[in-house]
Image (cartoon, rainbow, N blue to C red; front, side, top):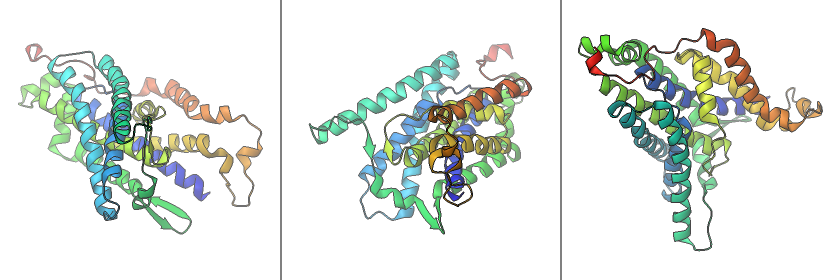
Length: 319
């Protein structure tokens, strides 16, 4: 049961961070399909930081530096979407799709070149940093508490406060609902959309590193297993509201946990692995999160209300 809770919270933390990132972008009026690519670049930033930090770096400093590095690369990469969508009125879905492809390719080429430069026999395109994993863990009884669980909770609280309790959040949401009206009262729609997209990049980048640290077992191999798209489903299911997104993250995290570790889940603590003993094919468990995604979206997407102006380029002349 502890293992089930532990893995559920880990998966939910990744989904929550990335979905909150998408929430900020879409509330500003920009559709961010490129969350997968941003996650990959965030994982790259965090992995490189872990690789080159001295072994005697204090745990707190390591955690903070890794968070900053993953967020920084996520922000830089998200600027591609911001520039294309805000300055050039490009199709946001196409740009996001291109970012997903570019992120994986760029990370693979860069890391492979770096590894080859260190050793001509090393043609791997992955980065491993298992030795530094303990800096992010705190043992509480039989539960391995990961500090990023707390970071995800803090991000949730701050997102709720920023979106609903601050002037910035109200302006951001106004730009996603009716940018012409927002512009008419002096709000700079372009700046707000840049802000929403870069916040999205920061959160998705951090989520990408959390994925590589936990789910990928401290190996940055530039495959985030569709978590960016799952996060989009979580955001839609949560109706673009932080608290609803948190609940959806836990639900999807539970099914992702079952898919990943069904054979080792002892629900009652009596040594009986109920899910493994059912005789159901492993392929079914692996498909389960995605089947649940399709079913949930089929029944809830009609009632979901996206920001009215999302995906629509803003033209001041139409004000």
